[in-house]
Amino acid sequence: MRADDDWIISSLLEDLGALALARDRVSVHDLVETIGPRGFGPLLVLLAGMLILPTGMIPGVPNVVALFLILIGGRMMTGAQEIWVPDRLGRVSFSGHMLAVSVAKAQRWALWLRPHLMPRLVFLVEGAVARRAIALILLLTGAVMTLVGLIPGFPFVLSLHVVVLGLALSSRDGLAALVGYALILAEILFITAFFL
Image (cartoon, rainbow, N blue to C red; front, side, top):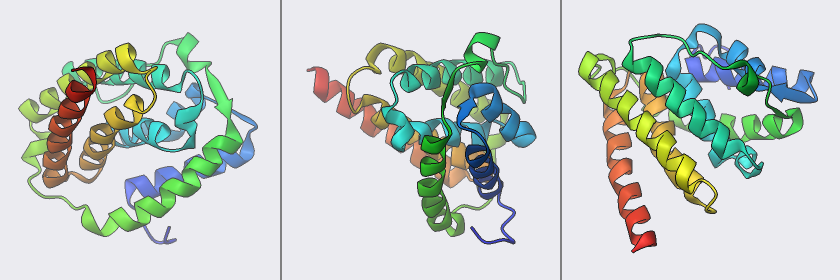
């Protein structure tokens, strides 16, 4: 990342990298505290990234992510701006080294994505209808991931639209949100073809 890059995703990855290097084990509470007031967008990017990157191979991670998606979707439905995490979920922890490896890989992708994301068609991410639509998508994604998350590859597939919608919220980029909606259709076709 560039030292002068104040993009919210860049600053989040820098903070997560510092957290990973400072601790052998990182808890969910640690992650939520590190994200702080940045909002739901960066949290969605982080959660989806955990499934796309090496941390997604850790047993139980897809279930934790699914629960988080349901929690975030529910909070967004009510108009809340911050995540609430049950204490038991907050105590779940994983390797700091694995997080550091994942952050290093994510930083390369973030560097590539940065010039392509910008505020445009903002009503598609900040309007009341748009936010409730995204909230509903997260609730459904979390429910589906709970049901099929143990099937290899499915958490990865289901995380694709989540990471794009997270980037859209983080950058106020409605065009990115449209890409996320298109990915949902592709994922539905993939899952349908798998079970038929």
